[in-house]
Amino acid sequence: MTENRTNIIIKEIQHWKKNKLLPSHYCDFLLALYTQGDTTNFIEESDEQSDQISKYNVFLISSNFFLLPATFLGLYFIDFSSVQLTFSLIMLLMAIGYYIVLRKKTNINITYSFIVVLCIFLFISLYFIQSWFGVLLLTIIVAGIQCLIWVSLGLYLKNKVLIVLGSIGLLVSLFYAFF
Image (cartoon, rainbow, N blue to C red; front, side, top):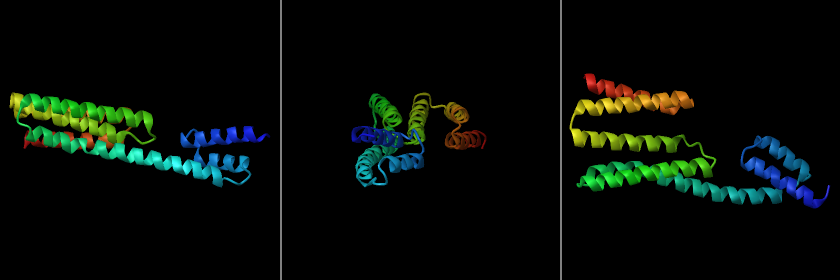
């Protein structure tokens, strides 16, 4: 086989490994086969790329993590209702943006980002229902409905984290309503 064709095949196998199109041990075997055991040059290139990607992923996850406390602090320390609404909508849109970016650009499990979006939506809705209507029972009902939606989404998506968080929230809502 010519050197050019071999390089093309090796790059294609690395692409498969990077995007998890084949299990990594299959890709390692194929790389060892096509490079005749000399995978040192090709491993160095893929390691450099994975370091850059992981720094990008760490940045996305850590900045997404700070949206929850920022939303909470913004809701409780901003005095003007219109500024609170604008700020909370910006935080919700940022969380949705992070969810979309993490879903499309990275190989990370996006459950965490989806939960951040749901929590921010829960914070916003509960805060504004309590401040605008002032009816505690309505706030508890909305929290229970949202947690029930979380459980339903968890069952539909087969996501245990959503099921557990939704169940805990639903139990807390029921406990708070009756006791």
